[in-house]
Each structure stands twice: as structure tokens, then as C-alpha cells.
Length: 238
Image (cartoon, rainbow, N blue to C red; front, side, top):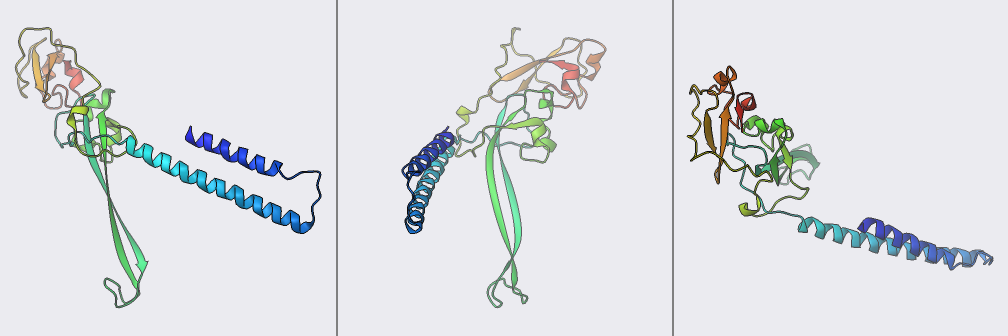
């Protein structure tokens, strides 16, 4: 919206300045040249000011949109759909630059390597698709090569500081309707049809129910851990 308004202002000013030069008048070549030169300078001045205003507005908007960083992603942690974490991506670039022989780091050929390291931290949310099963897999870390398969970047601005109170999941689990809290899941256990287990999510626990026979034979197997493994939804219902 800012960009569109500024363009309209520039176009209006340009049109107004050109309109002030009467089309029916035939000024001398010298006068015509001076008038056009003055007009062009004036238009250029307005464009520079408008661009400067735009830069300031967008710069402020970027700062305003910066959110607090959520809890840092932990490789091997237990994550499900809707969980929000922060992760830092570090990029290192090495360039060869010319230099004066004899100065620090300069080779005899008059060049040196300059390394620049840049770190950016963003918030990420575990996807609400079936790929959420990968969120607990470190191979799909949000700042990794395959992170976009399981995680969605939250916003376009880097996060700053820490405020986990603002990092609640957009997906609120339905309250457990059963009595008490089911026992925690234990890998390797032979779970019967309709058996229930709980998985600790830090501030709450999620309850899962083992599916009917013969699928229940997978409920205690590696790779089918409820809510965290790749194939958990094959054996469990949340």
C-alpha cells in the first residue's frame, strides 16, 4: 500500500510539473533546455525523497514484525503438529580479495581470503500435514536441508529475544475424556487393541489409542512410537 501511494504521488508531481510548461509556447532553444533541465531535477528530487520515505517505512515495518524467539529446537526432541520452535541458520562465505603484499593475511600474489559468517534466527511451526511425523526426526530439523518438509517458517522477519509465553501451539488438543491419565508409552511393549498411552509434551500430555487387531502389533515397535515417529499414525489414533 505504501509503494502504490508513493508511485501515485510521483506520477502526480511529474504530470503537474510537465503541465506547467505551456504546449502552445515555443520558447527559444536555450529557454527550453533550461526549463526541461530544471523540471528533470525537480522530479528527480521528488523521486529520491519518496524512495527514502519508502525505505524508512519498510525498515520500521520489519522491526515491528519481529517476534520473540520460541524455545530452541532440540535434535531428537518430541514434536507434534502445531509445535513452535526457534532455530538458527549460520552461513559462511569465503571470497578472494585483492590486497597489498606485506599486509596482514595478504599472499605474495596480492590476494587474501576473507570469510564472512552470518547467523539468522527464525521461528518455525511443525506442519499440520502428515509430514508432522518428521518433526521429531533430526534429519528434518527446521534449519536443515530438508526442514521445509516438516516445518513452516513463521513470518518473514527474524525473531529476537526469548518469550516462550507467546509460542503456544495453534492446535489445541481436545481434552481427555477418560478417567485419570494413561501410563506413559514404553517402546517394546505389546499393546492390546484400544490400549491407551500418554506422551509428555512439557506443559501437557497427549493421549494415544492403539488401533484394532492386527494393526495393534505395531504399537510397541520402533518406528511407530505415538506422535513422534514416521509411521505412528499407522498404529495409533490421537
